[in-house]
Length: 277
Picture 1 (spheres, one colour):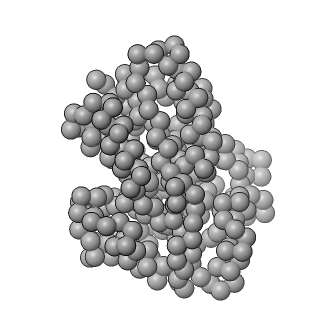
Picture 2 (cartoon, rainbow, N blue to C red):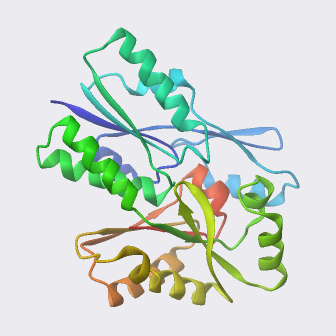
């Protein structure tokens, strides 16, 4: 059967990945000081980050509407949708409502919405897993079961140069943010069932990256059959450092590097690095 992968724009796939894996992105909308940015292929992420950095107010995001998701479900008979963590955004709830409404009219269609329990590189990793299973010829139910299991085992860790937006949006405690700022400490954060948690601390970004990569041995187990996805926000050199160090220490079957789109850049800020495996 014909299939398509749908994801919200927190999924930081490249244009090439979208073409090759038949991925449709449904954009979130960002707002800074009354100016709106639709997180699609026309968005100027650099301009957005400059405006966000100059703003004294917290930038806001709005998830896609159910109508936008319903439009994305059109076409192929089997649809797999990947959203940012339901604990971080209303995107999952919107996608689920769209599914219910769509199936009322077209009950024969197969649609499954995955809560990634993460964002950014986590969603990219899930997209690659979906494509892998689809190419193996598994049926819809088998794919759903295996991907849900994969999500339960996925690890996401990240380090950010600026914590302002996470703190101002309530996704990180004010105390953690201030301690990191005053002591010049980089916080190594992770996703615990879709919620952000503090894993370790390091002084300096390069030491933080070293620690973050070293943690893979403890968090990830055997990685020979796993894929490492590295997403960066205006930090190609840090992504390269993480990739090279991971290649030295581990035998991942593949390492993929992507740049963050608008939504992920909103929280990662310039210099942010997000690993999923």
